[in-house]
Image: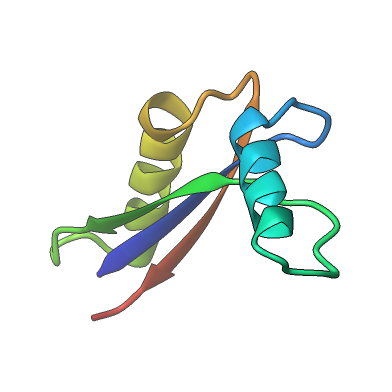
Length: 82
């Protein structure tokens, strides 16, 4: 199995990197882009001995304790069989 973890800043948290990207996009002539928010993406290979419930619990804990800062970030998990 493989888990995909998407980590993004919570709404309302200042995103200076996203603002810089947005500014660069405008300077390059792109029109119609109202805002840019950046985040992180992780792929985690899981041991085949885990069932789906165990895998989800493991990745949930990993995402909340290691991959994200729960004070300022949200995360979303997808688990797929390989």
